[in-house]
Length: 356
Ligand code: DAH
Image 1 (cartoon, rainbow, N blue to C red):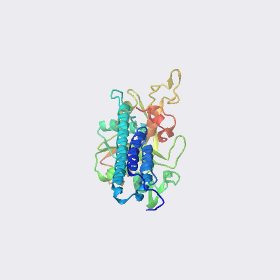
Image 2 (image 1 turned 180 degrees about the vertical axis):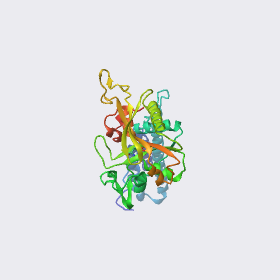
Image 3 (image 1 turned 135 degrees about the vertical axis):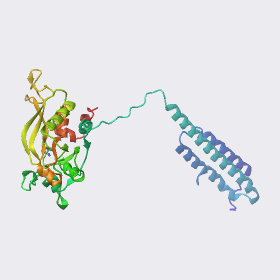
Image 4 (image 1 turned 30 degrees about the vertical axis):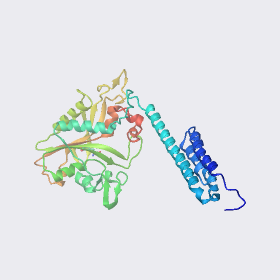
């Protein structure tokens, strides 16, 4: 004990400690955040806090008096910590009560969840599939990466045919190509199944084309029917039924002579324009959909070429068949009167949301 300093008054010290606890209790009643409360706690109990300051005097007390002061200090400390805990709990409770008061009028209507829409190309594909399923056709698909044999050779398209040109077809590694049409699904199906065959084959195809009316990938739908005694009349009747279901009853079908390597004879298929009922005039003006012609082109078709049957091991003397192919984006453009093909691939929700 340093002789120069007077020993502190024990009773006064204990009184001071007890009063500190009281002062603290008064102080934190006004504090509104945990941070303020922790700071106040540090002003009392921290290393340089008020309680610690008083305790410096402890060393100058005679040993027999120290326990009473120590006890008072512990009392003050416990009281301050207790006040902190109580105050924090009260704040928590007040927060919770405020949350509960803010929440929830259960009678308010719920915020609606925004439902997406099916893509117009999906709608059209499903509708066309449905029409042919109703006629007893089945849906078949094939891979995008194809052999040249399935895509060309077996379809009676010789190596020097212009469709095989590098400009039209995408070549990929390993001597394969991206299929340029859905017709190879005909080949795959006939190779794995005996006749009779009745299939439609939807799917994406790829060509090196890109402008307002061509995209490098686009969806097609192939059709193939093979059986004994299938005639050109069956083809026309099937197409007519399809047009009636898809575009409207009483619309005619026109077949124009054409050429495809895999069919003979071959035809371009037109349907009477549904907008002007084939008249070429709508509201006294040249029809905007068929440009006044009265017809809209919907695809290609024909009787399966004997060489195609030979390639897959069918006997062209025993069976005959017809095939057709159409562009699904074209069908969607016609059906929904969309005038830019690229709208289907830009994923603009304002465009897509129209197809509810
Ligand atoms: N594969 C042809 C194309 O992509 C479309 C086609 C025409 C398919 C006539 C056929 C058909 O099955 O008979 O241009």
